[in-house]
Amino acid sequence: LFAAERWARRGGGAPSRNSESGSWWTQRRRSSGGLARPNRVTGTPMTADARLAINASIVGGNPTGLGIYSIKLIRALDEIRNDFFVYASSSGAFGSLRARTGRVPRATRPDYGGRGHVVRLLWLQVALRLWLSKTRSQGLLNTVPEGVLRSPVPQVTVVHDLLPLRFPPEYPRQQYYFRFLVPRILSDSRLVIADSGHTRTDILDHYDVPAGKVKVIYP
Image 1 (cartoon, rainbow, N blue to C red):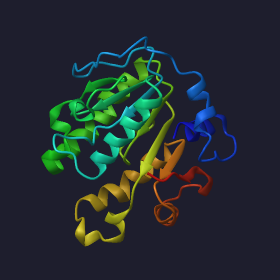
Image 2 (spheres, one colour):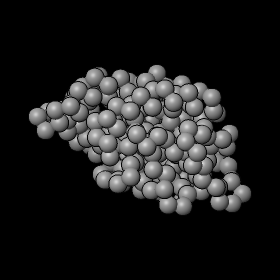
Image 3 (spheres, one colour):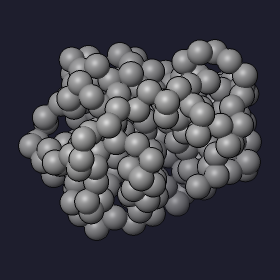
């Protein structure tokens, strides 16, 4: 993902799947001088040593599916770098991290169904946008297709599937989010990550996104 972000920011060719080890992000990582103490204060912005913000607000009190994916991704990233800041509604779900975390309001949790989804979207567009503007973040990684419209920093968005568009009757409310908001988020993203070739094909079929902007990176 970091190699992909580097590609997006510099406008170069497609990154290789093994290019992370020599990426600019890795070479420029800053040491924390030991384990960083998690910051669990609601709404606290990242510090200057956090170059990347990760939107993991999908992680709730009882993570399933996308939440578990987000947790595993962040744990894996934490093993190789600690200069990022995680925004999540349940920071304790990640266990012990070197990276700093900021807890977003509980009302954003997916545990609350449609209401939580609406509150989370509002938090992304207002609170997260504010913190991104005030900090020195150099990028935002969205672990699901929920991001900041007209983001003040470059963002990379992960898309797992487009089931609400393929089977609308099964997702009577979510289909509208995928029809009207997801296209704008992907349009505002420097890079779109699909976790399978099939998902990439669906993205190109349903959305007006340049093919060169959508890359496949397997989980």
